[in-house]
Length: 69
Image 1 (cartoon, rainbow, N blue to C red):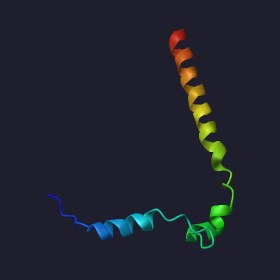
Image 2 (image 1 turned 30 degrees about the vertical axis):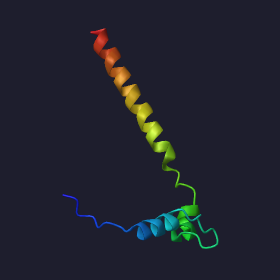
Image 3 (image 1 turned 120 degrees about the vertical axis):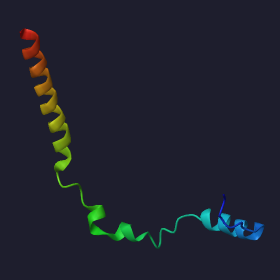
């Protein structure tokens, strides 16, 4: 069952005008002014690739040891 309220054509047109307005760069969104949004990442970007390399080395090592038997 559809429980949404129907919009009149005037309401629909008003909504389309509100949505199609260009972004207001004089008054940016609040999150733009947050200092943590401007800071570079904390240096943890290397952790995931390093973890992937370590796991790959372990898997390859286990395969080599398993195939040697």
